[in-house]
Length: 319
Image (cartoon, rainbow, N blue to C red; front, side, top):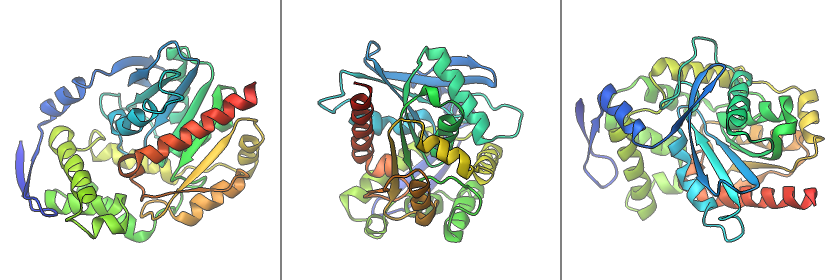
């Protein structure tokens, strides 16, 4: 166990990185359940009404575990229309949290098969799919390959082509976070990578301190989401090789389910122009989030609002 004093923001935060054993125990305490799939085991958690007709699958980005989407789940379950009428699944992507790390090349198409297998395990035949960042790439693969599984599609801060998708400044910070060990620098870089400039330039603000406290708490309890730098590299490889052809984008566009593409106001990890290009290819106007790439923490209420809007549209189309 390594203790590093991190004088980040206005607080003097002491970050204690967990041992591998303590980290895995912390993951076990979340109460996730195992699903045996073709590629190994995915750990997942269900929230909401198990008898609800409408099911939602939330897919996170690089290094994110299922519990990192909890704020979106809470916001969905506070919606007056949907709180009693939806069941939500969050899960650890391959190589993160408790899920297994298959000894094979990671691709977004393989991760889409993981999701297909998870939905089969759950017995869900039609699902509202939400994907953020890398999760949005996986969601595109689901929509293109298994369109019959999709009830609605909501994509956040993502692109159809992962090659050279991040600004170079973001790439430098991301790689420094993977391979660096100084807690103060890692926390500061993460704040800049994920959140709006108006947030990270004002460490005295309530929002900055709330987000910083959340991230520091995760560092102490879970360390990194991915199980080692090798998994990060595998997931980054999946991102950079992701490519949905024009023909497959057209197939998604004409599949019949409602589509929303959400773009960040500022983004160090996926170029805004790429997010706008994806929306254009899918025949929709991009909707702007008041957040950076870390919208799942910075503005989960807005994500939930858009998911609910898309679910309502799907319901209207099916009646």
